[in-house]
Length: 68
Image (cartoon, rainbow, N blue to C red; front, side, top):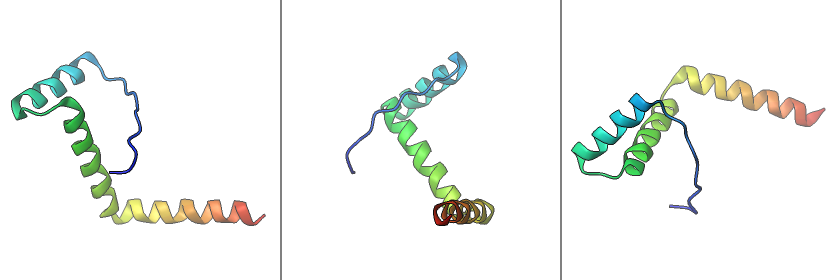
């Protein structure tokens, strides 16, 4: 893994409790569960054609702004 970057997130009390429960049942650290969920979310976006199309459009708009 590249250099780790610390980030802060805010969860509702219910979300925090559910996350801690999942981590406890899986006998994993909460941070490991969060990283796994984020990795899965990113991978799902990589496979999502609609997301990919939106990403291409955003890149094209940025490119146009740079060329002005």
